[in-house]
Amino acid sequence: MFYLKRFALILALCLPCLAQAAFPDKPFRIIVSNPPGGPVDVMLRVLANKLGETWQQPVVVENRPGASGIISTGVLVKSPADGYTLGMVVASALTIVPFAVDKLPYDPQKDLQPVSLVARTPFLFIVRSDSPFKTWDDFVRASHERDLAIGSFPRGTAFHLIWEQTARRAGVKALYVPSASSGKTQNDLIGGQLDIALDAPSSSQALIQAGRLRPLVITSPTRFAGLPDTPTLEESGMADYAPQPWIGLMAPAGVPADRIAFIQQSVAKILQDPAMKAQMATLGMIPIGSTPAVLGATIDHDRAEMAPLIKELGIRLE
Image (cartoon, rainbow, N blue to C red):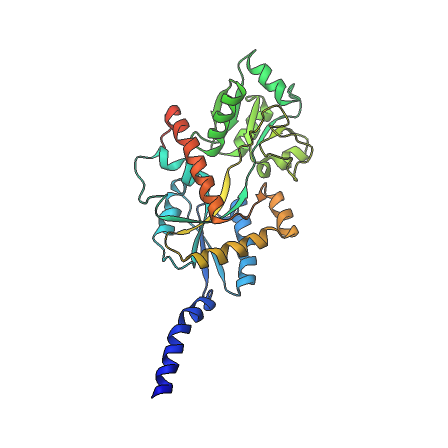
């Protein structure tokens, strides 16, 4: 009887360790607001495959597009806080949408838990190949001399907000022309209806390579591997300014810290792989792989920056 009691005590003490060692022991799912086939979805599927190989468990990507990320985030926050359900969240869902809608079905600050900053996505100012603008300075000067038009995605998107930030910092004035697609903006730029456009490298790279568009400047802090000859805004005279929306891995609030750390370390290791870096460059992304604390601080910083700008512009999302 003594030995049975002693064995039971040892087993009770070891059970938490055994439970911890078992993670992960079942499939994962990663929810994303982007539809299948786009850069974020493609990147996530590559990352999910590599995580599956690392963890020896299936990692399923679940696309939940619509409502500016509210749908996918709503599914994420209602998921079990066990680490097996994660969300690949774009910056705007947490730093723009909460200030541009009347009400959310969740609290983005209380119901979510940061895991890792996965990537940054620099934006690109582009002109048609025969544009008189050879430098960013040419564009700034021309904006004070005549009426110009800049095209990009709809009002309230990250593209629109970054344009508004940049215009204020650079003292630029131009009519913002929103469009539902990158293709429409590119066609209007080539056709002469626009003077300049703000786009993603992944969307415009084919037309740049074909010689129909020309990159003027990129928003990354250092030159982007996919467009090494394109100067940055900082190089072009805008000191300490490199706006880049982020993509982050989040979890429902309450996931144990050891599981968050385990997931973050796996993600960070994969993002340092040269092949992964090269693939992400083709998608217009810069891999990061930060700690949860860095992602949390990034969210707080961007929310503080975006909230007053959204209020000033009177942006409301349906």
